[in-house]
Image (tube, rainbow, N blue to C red; front, side, top):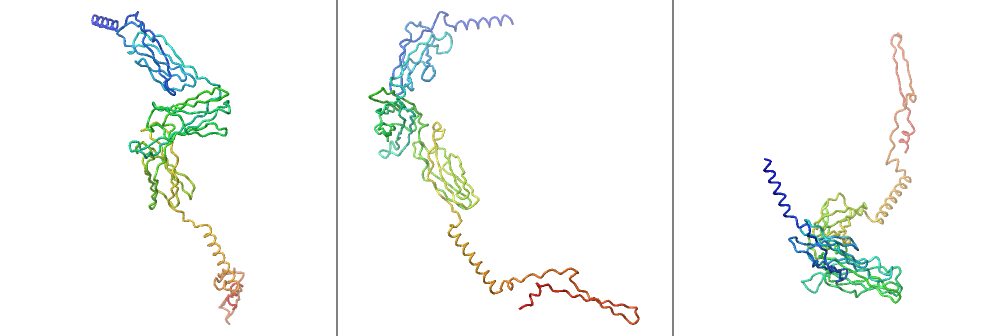
Length: 415
């Protein structure tokens, strides 16, 4: 048994030795590492393998590390890489050679390159840059039934001179556009921009890059760029054709999907039902375009619906605005004027009847008093007559009861 184990152990050692590369084989770092700006918020990283690298049976790869503006890292077998990132704070990255199969030898040392931040005076760039996209109908062609509008706004930098003028650009994919329609503040400085038809795909997953530059006669205006995920800024349209009806105690609500390039199954919905009599809201979530509920009382209900793109088709985004209220049912309460007239009429009738009864002594005749209960024994007058027979053996006692009449009863005999 022992000889067999020794032979197996020797074979394992020989196999591992064959897999290990030469101890003197070292990985050398890449050369000619450069970073080049190729578009708004976009850079190209490029390098070359080290020409002094010895040939071997080890397949080479590269480890890329982003140092700023936000740390990240990844591995690639290519000698170039395109990244989408903000650049107004500068950009820095490093790369090194690694064995692609993950085994020894160790990785090479790092080589780095960087882009400096663009020039400009501090406090002159825009702040609070926000953008919203919205899908609208496109009537010119059936091949493109929808178009996307883009609306961006910002605040002027706190140290920007009064003559500062800003200009906005966006890039989506390979298309870059400059804004042509601006809104201005009281000093005639651009503070918002609108693209009625942007070259953006509402169902796309690419980043939207937006950059705002500036100019002034008194200072160098620092540019500012920002990346937006479309699902996070897309303002979904509200559902359309909302209808509601009540059949007995059953409330049924239906609607159609919003105007959007997404198909029907790509939406989540919220239904808000407001009971106008009790003054409370009921909110329900669902994935279909209909809702049924049981109601227990007659009332008027206000119905509103809103929508959001489902996580099945896109990352979680914004909810649409609520639809306009749709009213169904009715309250049976009469208007206050009708209720007031009814109460007033009843009061006048009651007053007339009361006066008439008092004047004509009709009240006592219509509603005679109930006789009083019998008096106690003290109210009786007992007359006892004793008659005795001649023999005196028999005594007969005769009792006569005379009940006094109370004054209430005596009134019945007065005409």
